[in-house]
Amino acid sequence: MSRVVRAARGWIGTPYVHQAACKGAGCDCLGLIRGLWRELYGAEPEAPPAYTMDWSEPQGAEALWRAAARHLMAKPLFEAAAGDVILFRMRDGSVAKHLGVQSAVGETEPGAAAVKPGPAFIHAYAGHGVVESPLSPPWQRRIVARFQFPKELI
Image (cartoon, rainbow, N blue to C red; front, side, top):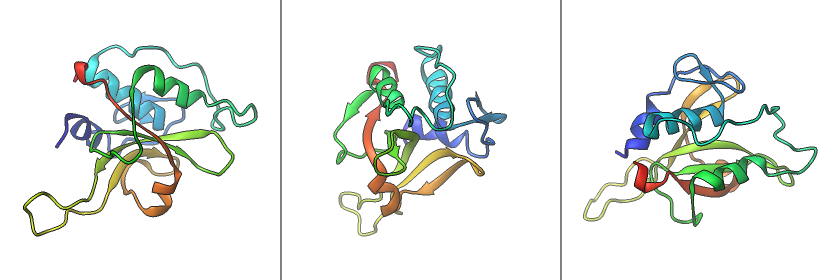
């Protein structure tokens, strides 16, 4: 299991709290990624500005995507790996405003007869807190970008 996935699973059960990033006390989807950054590297690379739950939708600004691109390493969408940070667009035509950590890819291991459980991800979800969910086809269709934490730091 990757260090990122192990750390993310430690956040499961944290309540959903908008703009928070405190393991066990509360976080939102960005707060989960911020908290993981602190666990893996120490200080966060930048302080996020205050943000609303609509994530710049009225302006059409891809603020979350730009912030991820500043600090994480972009990957092709089809190169899924456990530990990837995935960015979702929740509705067509809206800005990307949800993040999660891929926890399983669900493929057959080389030389193994059995298939691993399907793809999954860990995310902070309003009304649910931090959970590990199946990365079902409806979620997969919403993925617009894939990143990994900088390797030289983990």
